[in-house]
Length: 301
Image 1 (cartoon, rainbow, N blue to C red):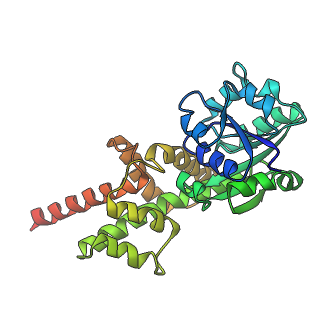
Image 2: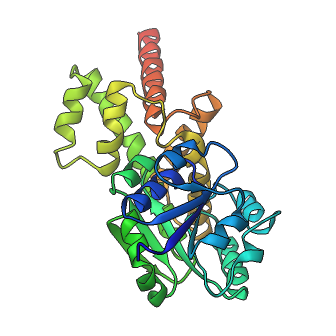
């Protein structure tokens, strides 16, 4: 399938490592982004001037946009995708939006004769680049099979969740746990330091213990090194997923004691001006709260 041309609309923080993997697999990749295209070109991609130009050259088009508003603009705006796609095209929707919005997207794409597949990414841009991310797929099984060479070029780990629109719920469950586990990692590392251990020792031991987790392994080293920028997963990015996960949980009447305890920390991080830093910086808030607790105890004595 490498003779197939892949189109990327949205080659930013997440789209760029996806495009990089596709190029490494031998695909010709054309792409559109309003600005900052140099990194894509340096990887071997061909930058085009509009979404319509991408549709004119590509067989399979991946859209990776940060919001529903951005997606509508790309699809329906001047030189948008919608007027240029047809039966010869397959679209793979990577962006995370609510299920009803996704289903409306699919309906409009299919009205043009094109086929559409949902591919939610679970993992940071760095995890995508190193093929450690997961893909949650939603759509027709035959279409999943047709797109396998492209999907395999992006990630080794793939799950076909069900019909189009079903994968977003699984993505939100994953991000629900990202919030909980990242805060737990911050608490654990702070506890270790307070107990007199070097933070790196805590990381080295716990990551290989029964208490380790994917988020501990990814974020605790960043906490220990105080390496919060550049941010592979900033608070401002996670904010959308936390809000959507909260809506999903509340809509299904789920008890969520851990998530409800964790969520305010990620909201507070943005309010306190560290929203552009990686979510591993939540340890700063845990440390600040620990210091406040110590002061209270001294005052009470």
